[in-house]
Length: 113
Length: 436
Image (cartoon, rainbow over all chains, first blue to last red; front, side):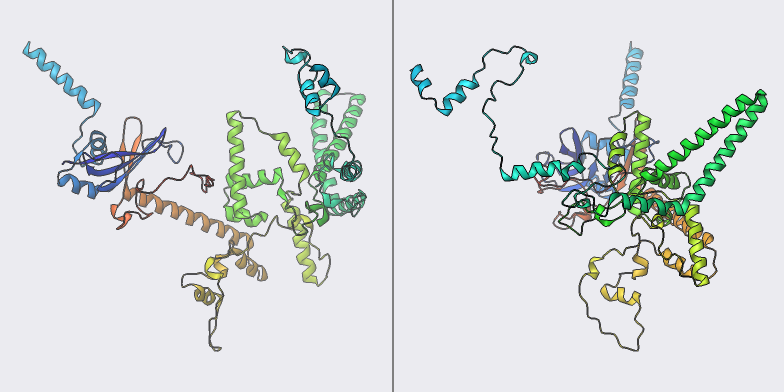
């Protein structure tokens, strides 16, 4: 069975909060995971000085995440996005990239024609 | 059947009959009275009721209207409804006492202002080149203005008056130990806010200057800031409500600091000359509340027998250490340790202003250092990724903190196998801190 790094939704209605967990892929979303790597709060917070940019708070044990990736854990799509921000995964699933790829494919098609 | 019922009217029948409305009422406005409340009120005059009305027409009359600028509690009146201690006596005494203090000054101020205005008027007159009639008019106007100014001043002072006796401060006659505490006046709170925000003083220095606890200073600044924010947002303030409540409570007025200083100097001079003088400190210069109370530390609540040899010097620091190795001495744990040094400095001929400024600078420096330290820690542990709309702040944590059972409170994340009890009755959800 595959080990995945994925998000488990906690929190309340209209107030989501995620644990970033390492779990067997076939287990239930909120079942007890093998390890809790951190948390992801998807609701943007106002910056402390009240003027800067909003921010989302993420807690993550980076070294532990690296270990799990090293032993073959597969991140889910949202988890991949988060891990790529810290620089431990190659960026994927980004809109810009998808757009570039689509443009490239279009060009190739035109060239073929 | 019907005739039988009328011949034997039972109470339930009467009620049922009466409960049926005579006409159907389509519109509420046409209904003069509610048709179904017909049962006659019991007008038996019990002794209690009689006594109640007696009270209402006697002593109770006093509570129909609030007393302006004073408390209006039950304890303030005797059984006959007369004010205890006599209202007029108390007020007069207060008035004379204050007038002795600042009568001259107030007069001087009014005159000074009058002169200023007079000069302005004179300038205007020169420019216009008026005749004597106009000048006379100006003079009368000036007099009127002076009079109104003086009236305003007196009203202001009356408004800020505190009740004289402790009787006036007891809301519950059976609880002699409960005294209602004074609240800060509107001007006082404004002054505290300006000190912190405009003059950039520290909370500690403002607290010791005004005799208001540091917690209260913080609360005042926060509430005043909220008030300003609301005004900016165009939200209405409950000003009449605030005014009404403040008029019924004992109030700590804002005192003129310069005047207070003069009085203190005078007292010091008297003390130096050996005169007993006016030992009673003016009520106004008394602090709003005790600001330097020692907080009770849980380690010190136990009884402790600590044998010490007589030859050894046992200081307060040692006493603290006897309770707990990390417990600091009393002199350092009080909210204002600098006041001790200040009192010692007063005995010598040291410069108080320099010392006070030094305390403020020290506080500011330590606060800045703390903030910088926090920033450094954040820099080391927090990585920021700039997204399209917002930043993503990654805090590096350790999974080990959940402990062996995975249930430690220091662990990160929503916990497993722990019901979230926020919907359970009896859960207190009052926020204990404010996110800055």
